Length: 99
Image (cartoon, rainbow, N blue to C red; front, side, top):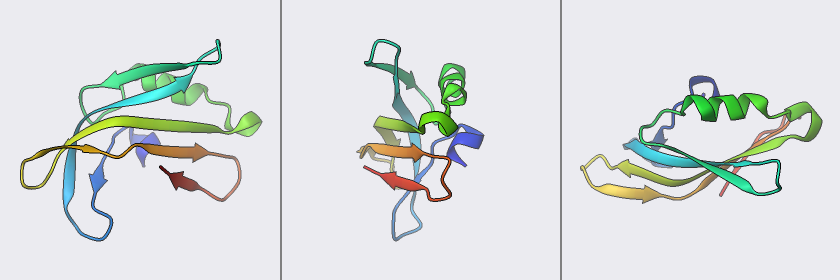
């Protein structure tokens, strides 16, 4: 859902509380061996983020999406920073999520 819709959504692990994501950063490997930081000021991936995700050759070497500086509004209206999230992309049928 995250990649197909290009939208970040957050909810508590064991509850039903939904947090509104207000902004986040994504990190992508660049050709120099480092990382490029792309920022969205909404819960939506930017067109550049989507373009970079589409360019990842999962069949060749897999990939990883890194989300950090995820700022959200809690159900009671407080500003919170959520923990980073890494999504590992693979051609295998097994999918991993992690911090």
